[in-house]
Amino acid sequence: MTMNTGSMFQLPESRRDPYMYSYPYNQRLQQMNGTSYILAFQQGDVNGDYIQDYVYLIGQKFPDSPYTKNITLVIQDGKTNQFYSVPLKTNEGYQPGLFLGDLTGNHVDDILISIDSGGSGGFAYYYAYSFQDNQSQLLFNYEQFNREFVYSVTYKDHYQVEVVNKTLQLKFMIDLSGRGEEYLSEIYDKSGKLTTPISGWVSELNRLYPIDFQGNGTYELFAIQRIAGRYSADGLGLIQTTLVWDGNKFVPQNNQQQAAIFGTSLS
Image (cartoon, rainbow, N blue to C red):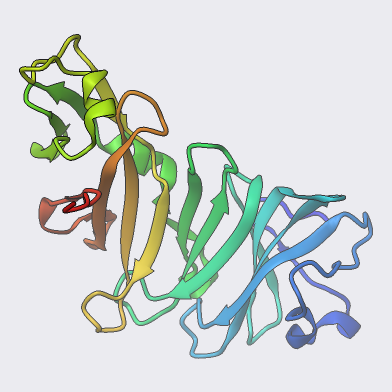
């Protein structure tokens, strides 16, 4: 079975019952090449005809490994039983997942895809699609999000770190004074002056959660990025961005972000 860009495919009559595919994700989908599996499955009205459709992530798995490749989004029209495939630019990784929900406010379910990178940085790959009228439209692309914002992370005197989103012209200050003597003595002298210039960074997209903050049935996208200090494991906090659909793309709500920092013990 070949699934090309924009192509439709249809199973034999004996295989058209969509409910037969709602078995566990690791169960094999019998195909001619014997290599493709259903990795994730959800159902909802994604084309806007008020009939439940069936949404799959299909890909290849490896023996004794959670790694998957050639991941493809597949949608079955619940009315016609026709299948549509949508290829993904980044189509390999771990634990691929699906979420269906209205992301744009048009009362039709959209499709959010997540794929873990499996790397030590905790990155993940995300795509969001509309499939209204059986036409795929890319709503969110994690690579575009990663390019959208330019950050600087700069250690300052007196146990401060300045985080700047140069794109949105926002500044956050992180207080390091509670990090402990061992950590601080490697960076500052006894008067609180930096012994050498230090810069950190804000990571690429780590996690993206659909959350209905307003309780109105439309989901915002809640993006999380790690703030790193001298090295990747030196976590200073998180940048949190609530993204809302403006009619054309997802943008930061009220042109704002938040910085979440770790608490320190009162003792």
